[in-house]
Image 1 (spheres, helix red, strand yellow):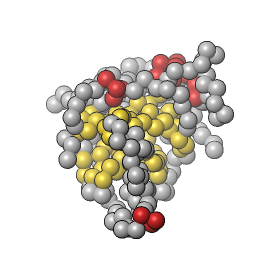
Image 2 (cartoon, helix red, strand yellow; image 1 turned 90 degrees about the horizontal axis):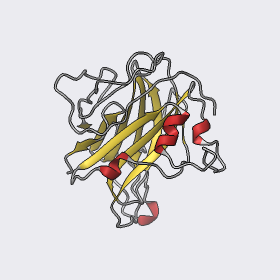
Image 3 (cartoon, rainbow, N blue to C red; image 1 turned 180 degrees about the horizontal axis):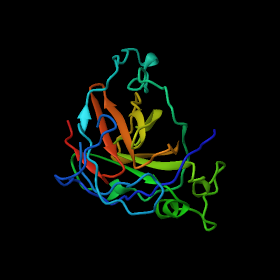
Image 4 (cartoon, rainbow, N blue to C red; image 1 turned 45 degrees about the horizontal axis):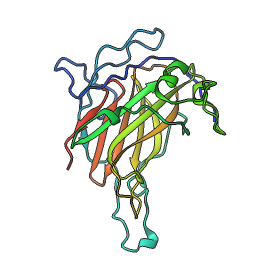
Length: 240
């Protein structure tokens, strides 16, 4: 897979409520809580200062989602993504990664919680992931701190809380006038474990010409899609 584009620096501090004077996102659907977003067009290393809240935070998926079949043999754990468009204009790939320092591990809430971080350098990767003594993880894939960050951005997407057998599935990545918009859903295994954990995935995405922030739209139910972005830190949503 070929990746090409530019460089940016995003902040990742935890936050739950954005100030009333925050900028409004202008590149698609999505409400807001949080702090810090990338500034400029990626040509400087200035620290992000302003959260860009998503509005709306939650909406209905804009595509048909059919009911699961009654026959367990026909169960489709990707039914929430089945009719989602997969027409991606940015190349992306979910990558294996070692143990990560997750934001949601520090959150105490009875509500749903979400976060996405955009890592843009090997130094940031080493701050988030527990790598080997040589700096890189030793898996069969390309070490995640050896990614070409001039052409890629590495997204760490978190959601919680629930069964650890539920994972993220990503269908497309779009270039917007502010950065990257990643679309996907949670899987729905027929049989699920009874633990209560945060889920996360790591996605390498081609960097668009302009990059201020990474947005995520995650379908978590047949009538429920949640939006959040890398300027917000951790956001919480009332659990249904």
